[in-house]
Length: 81
Image (cartoon, rainbow, N blue to C red):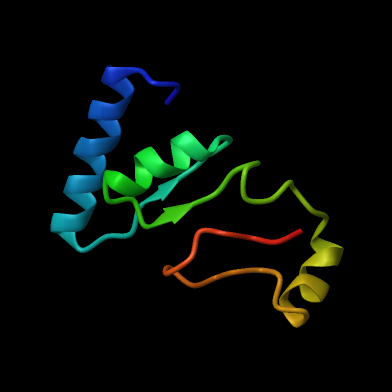
């Protein structure tokens, strides 16, 4: 998004559409706290990106889930590494 008003307008429009249609929306590529704040303020409920967690091999997924490090709740946008 990088502080671009056109990008923000697009995210806002898609987020509004998804909310009104009862659909979930995932904002991908969240790399900064500012991007997270912006998309959250626009109504995006699901996010992923380097800010939250670096890519992990599939073989590590079970261990992350078992120790509770993978947050899957909509209430939180954080994944602990």
